Length: 298
Image (spheres, one colour):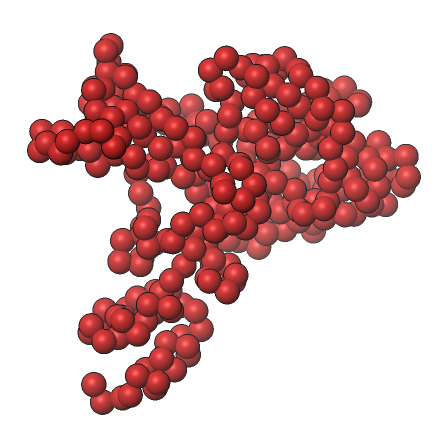
């Protein structure tokens, strides 16, 4: 190569963190691929606490962002359209999934930082079990999935080793980054409309199809991944029978104005732990929030 390694490293630095450009340059030759390792490295981090979950290279082949087969988790608005067994049968090709005698087992994947549910790991498909099954060509499709982790994309953020965030797929729109602020409804310290504390961003919303009573009767509510650090506090933890089963919940209050704004799912009390994905996440009622720059918008 004509240029010394120091000059080539300067070329990677001049790319400004562009993953696509770093990958394209790395593929030119073996020497550039080795020099570009640091420029290509990305981490998948928990959206709630920022904890690094895994190296993105373990997910995206050759450093490019490609969509994997869709496996929706049971907390998004579109969950009913692609349940797990249906996805295993039609998208991932495990035709016997859901048949009598063909047992499918999965295990939770939790964030090592905050303990939030991030997805599922397939541990058993019929008679095949992860870590205890010898390779056989007739079971190649099932063996590809055994032990594989399916992580919720909305639970994650893509970051460079220095902490700078990058788009995980399409760049987020300005509207998805807009903060929702506290309206001080039900506050004993401030008049309605006089708080304005930033609680969470629009992209933290996981579902809008919820309902909750924060003190003024049942009303529409959002189910969200997390609040901004220090934005809320929880009180009055208790067991409660919900539509999805029994759970321990707590009331959530704005730390700035003291208004009761929603709830937290503290633990799952259902026998089969069907709601484990919700544990540690929150809900917020619509009357308590207002999106920045869009009066009256959802």
